[in-house]
Length: 206
Image 1 (cartoon, one colour):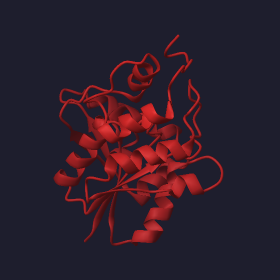
Image 2: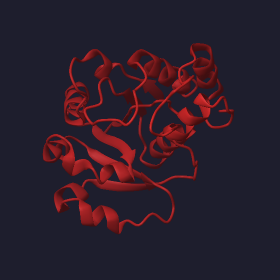
Image 3: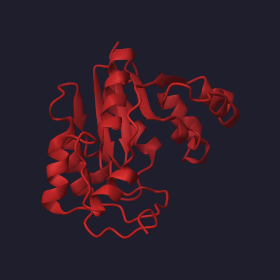
Image 4: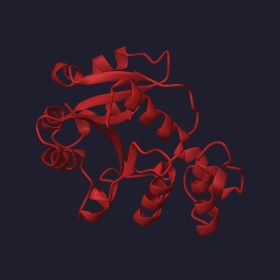
């Protein structure tokens, strides 16, 4: 039986934490590949102006190019309207068939929001979840917030600590600080060349 991991997100920008989690998921759960799916139009309001989708997709392509088990997908970018996870997983289920073991890889804190996502019960029927955590994460937070039906589809994935966030990277880029060792060098060059976060003014940098 084949097994495929889907990692969705804004990836603004993609960083080493994303890549470490994806590789850990691939090895631990025997995934044939991990597909990174940048959001086209995130349905939930952000507290900053999201970088144009083509730039975010290009950064994902650069970040995943060195790993033959990783690939980038334009599925949500080329689909009109808001990017709902259930629609994305429905399409991947159609592509890979019922015999494929399909996993959605996301952070444990994001899993706490699944009940606010569109059609969470159908989403849980389409795939299993890999909830990425740091060692020592309080798993009771998940079991208290999620229904028993959804929790039964959740696998917790402890990953090595790579303490980096896209929010912090945007702040550092806007301030002209170094991004070295936090994101792939090709992504850092892309950000610098395209001045993606130069002069960024958001709630997070004010």
